[in-house]
Length: 254
Image (cartoon, rainbow, N blue to C red; front, side, top):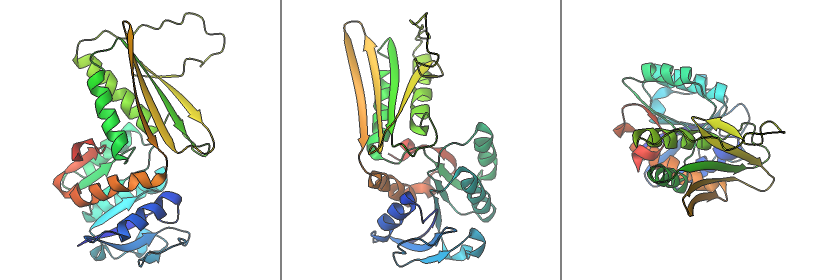
């Protein structure tokens, strides 16, 4: 039985993840951690901070909070050798460098997206990147998302760019020579254009659009509800000990 603690347990994702954990026969939801009391406890104990947690009562720590809180979570877990899963986005290269050192003898998984379909779509995009002259990304999220582009779009762009480079493809030229409204071509990440849409009622959606001579290919993933992320988190809880050090993204687990 794997005993799990959830940081950010009062938030929307925290409650969804806690509910999913509570429904597994091989996982015991041990502690919910949040400065606010969670609406539902699912049989777990609520504490206001990690300082109130007995490290001997948990086997894996899951964090769906904020960037700053997740940094604190990682520091706390690294010092105690507790495998940790982080689903928050917005970290810097310096954060990942620090975690590679801190978790050299531990286990940390950081992923921008835990939806299995999203991870597979990203994998398919990397495969397709070798065969098309052009590619752009459109990502759609709800109007409460504070960052743009999304972590998934950024990760997808970087992986596509790396695949193009490995395949010997030349950098894409920019066809636009006149841009009266600056930014109309979207953000550029490693040579890949990303366009971010924010709308009510959306959850998380992404299109990767490829174009070649006389044909096109569009790969789209739709997360209609946040519950779609739960399967990936459960997969990570079950297998994180198989992956030493820092693991970025869920793809290695599939």
